[in-house]
Length: 453
Ligand code: SF4
Ligand code: SF4
Image 1 (tube, helix red, strand yellow):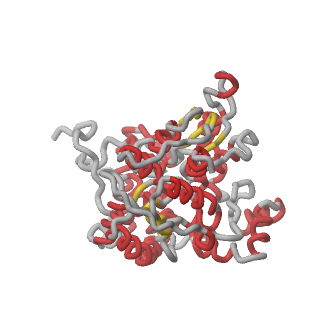
Image 2 (tube, rainbow, N blue to C red):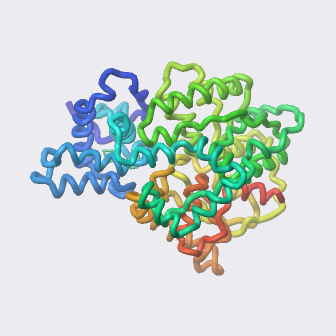
Image 3 (tube, helix red, strand yellow):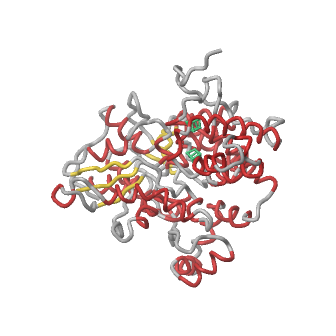
């Protein structure tokens, strides 16, 4: 049989068979890794995407035979550990994804290996589980007095050195501060406005705030509300939110993902069925509801209803504009904005809607950088990965620092550094080594500013 180089059909994605009898079978998973790694060895397109592929190709090239049979199986997990499930290899590079007969899904194979590893337990289990308890951490850290202490410790060199040694969080990695008043306790309430549905967009919005915006940077949520209010779009804030589950998924802790989904999916599905667009300001959380949970629960009507109603905020606003229902009465130009497209937005396949929206603002020049920043959720703050995360991000740090319109067209520093993923934005700020300090602004905050808020 002749096997084509790429597939002519649109890529599809198979459900994650995490309840299947072989899913946690280590031999079966390693057999599949051997098959897939061998295909990657012959292809090597993804070598520049992350560190998984260079690690794999080094293992092969430096092995006894120069082929997969020269790589001991106990080394396979070295490749898995470098994958932070950004999905970019699957969504943007790989010609062998289904329906191609080679049926290759590199990220979900890494997820399966991580799930097996998680069940067995690892030496970093305490740190990894603690970091991924985003909601519990937020609740604890935002208690008055505790919040000041936690924030002070994050900037204290001695405490950070101890933290690296004892817990394994890299002493130099940027860590988010906690807000003293979370979004859920401070957000405005929508006026009773009429619902104007468009062909592309429902006329009312349910805000799934996300753990990060709720506990760490509520200002992003307040800015989202300002933009909605300015455009006379009625909204509700999803009550008593649980985490979307992405930090647990990245660990391979699928049972915890399922527990969280029991809370989030019924609640969000009710809003979806009431006709709300569900908008989340962090792309990883949006992706979780658009892709990972529907693939984990393919037969769950709630998961499918939520998927259909879920919007990236700029996907929503650009759609609203196409519906003729978005105001463009901008009061203020934004100057030179270096904008980073987060991987978890890129793989949603909605196009560069944030760039499109920011470019509608007069007196604004957007320098778009579409490459992995290396932060990748909690991965980039871990002791063993932080330096690699900074190395992966280096081309991004450079491109963000070289806005083509700055310094009278000679290329130079931007007025704003923006990423759809605010964690990536701060990681980029750190990588710009002082040149981006104080310039990080989430695109939603920039949009609110352009409207004059
Ligand atoms: S999903 Fe991302 S991190 Fe994982 S192998 Fe693919 S490109 Fe690398
Ligand atoms: S994931 Fe696909 S595109 Fe990337 S190296 Fe492997 S076979 Fe090639």
